Length: 248
Image (cartoon, rainbow, N blue to C red; front, side, top):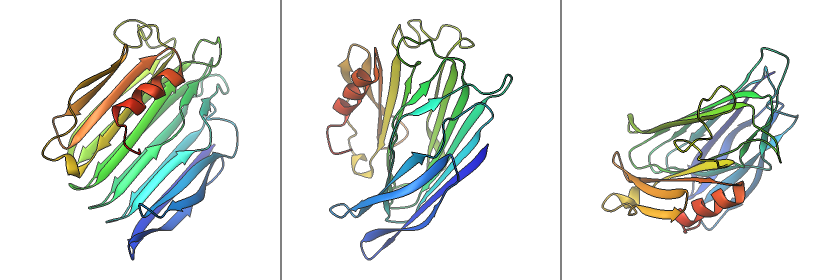
């Protein structure tokens, strides 16, 4: 199955308006309400079918105009499932945030079910004074289940220069994924990137957030990255929430 979802937001009279909200099963986009105190509009991605399944090719495009504020969430975790033999699934996310705009990308995690073969790739382009909160989380299988093959690859560019590029892979084809260099025996992992133009002079200091979690400022801009590994999603999410205690 091939499907594309498109979301575009613009600023008008101090508030954000959605000018594009299009989707196809299994990705359905629903506006779930504005946050008037911040001038932000919130949308949720809703699963219109099971998956992603092997053979699916999914794409999400997000555009935030100058001064607009958008938050994108999902109503539930994404469960990557196996498809017919020899097939794999992909999800490509491409987002752009213009000058003065703000995007908060806060989906629920990806769960790599046994036998899946899934690759997720994200590319975010930011104007010099754009703001971003970007969370990604991965859970290795359902309860008492070994994961299939899953990989997440993320690139964020600020004013055309790479600010962050990272990837993580788990499953039978990812050698050593459970070892100390990757998850260290953990079953879940997550990252939270915050880019804030107000941090130009002084981004957050490095900090240890727990046994498998830390916050690190990034050299390429007013940004900091939190990463966490834990036994389950609750442990990972709690560590990421400690990284940036403001309302993210």
